[in-house]
Length: 285
Image (cartoon, rainbow, N blue to C red):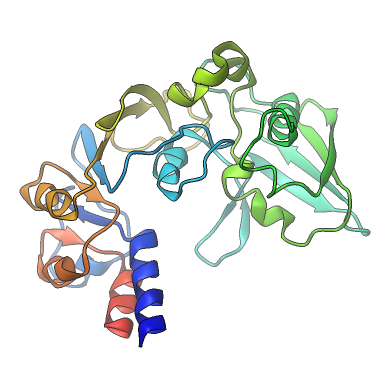
């Protein structure tokens, strides 16, 4: 029973997103739909359970950081709803027969939030930064199979491994695959974590430690632009305060809910819970 409860708690705490007041919702099964919620607001407020300690993916060792990263940074490769690898900053990749070399072709229409160009040199810079022992990146252990990165041309890189490593591509779907602006990293140094620059749909605007992080849409984003111009991420360590702000409408999305509040969320027509979360709740409750 204890292990069952641990599994349930982990799944809920890991990924629950509860939305309220984000726009009109039809009655019925839309309540637990996985479809995007229609938004008619200029600003979305997200409540997190803790303040992200690092806004630099190469330094990050906390899970909550990802709640910001996915808005500010793009990854080389994404995972779709079928758990398949799909392109993001990379458009195509090929593995050599011996499993040692990955040739990756990149998008040619991407710019960083600081106006500099995303290209193969930027990818090489990011990998070398993560692998630099003097930098001490938290990502080094994830990509320590990499021997070197070679620039083939402006938008093609070769990543050469020391030995075959089957999970390598999966590493590029998370923080090790997030690409930072080399110019911003060099200019800001250790302060990059407080002024992150990526290629994502939102760019960083401002941060008040332990209080809020402000983002706004990046006008030159290469992909489909978000509906909401601004995002404010606020910190609510107390689960009751976090949930109260959700129900009052002061917060639109929260990342975690207490077990005692699950039934209230499920029954409230003004809240939306991802369908898979409802299934997990029913399975383990």
